[in-house]
Length: 336
Image (cartoon, rainbow, N blue to C red; front, side, top):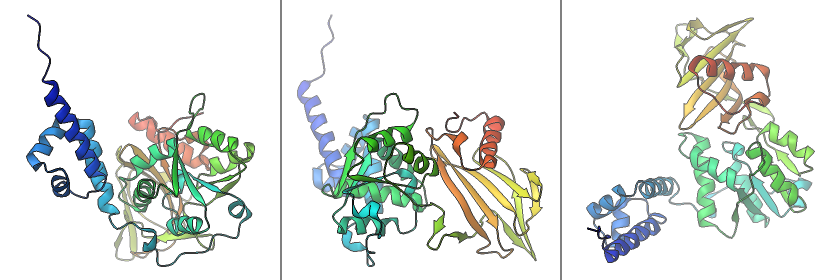
């Protein structure tokens, strides 16, 4: 006996309802709002999404992003700076934004200044893919990533997504640079990746490098080194290495990854912290033994599966990542 196919009318209705849920999610911030826009009950929506896990994830991610930027408008910025007096920006029509610039101070003000000057923003397909992962970081990097994705969705006249050819490219940096090279007459690359900025010259791509961890005046950002605790006059750091948080203390000519230590001014701490599918590599230097504002953020980078760790700016960073990978058998990025 032949099996009968499912009711085609029921299948068509299900697909129609799923489509309406996705469309509603693009404008909503909660399932309650989706119910109101689709005339479906919450149990109905929950049942449909449970049978379609990919759509379920997309809907939930979209709602999360909308909640973070539900009042997004270009008028939200009370202080809009003039476009930088830089020939690279003045004589260009498009700004190609790299994901490494998420977290840069005043990034949003800078983008709005570009828009006010009639510039357009280009997000390449590798960058968009990275932003979708970075938006879940619970920090300014995640906030900036979600902000850019919101711009793409809500201001299509200002932001353009471009699918670029990634074939025969060793990583996303190479594919983005090749795209920029092919359109170098009317665009400028904006990046906080030193390797990308350096290689841009080889491709003859106009590029503006903005350091991630440096604020105006080229001073390192002063921060609280949270893992350290104040006990009396001492600032104490306990090192307990795991595959989720791995730290190394560099004090004098010695290095430590396990134990409890009294920090000294000038000590350096390297930190690898897992964030979703990526790891953050951060370098702090102790500048004070106070409980707050006791360190400078000297370097920070998100290590994605496409990051070439052998090209990190300092040898000590490369060795630190290799030590972590060997200890926990976790391959971070790629090595050339």
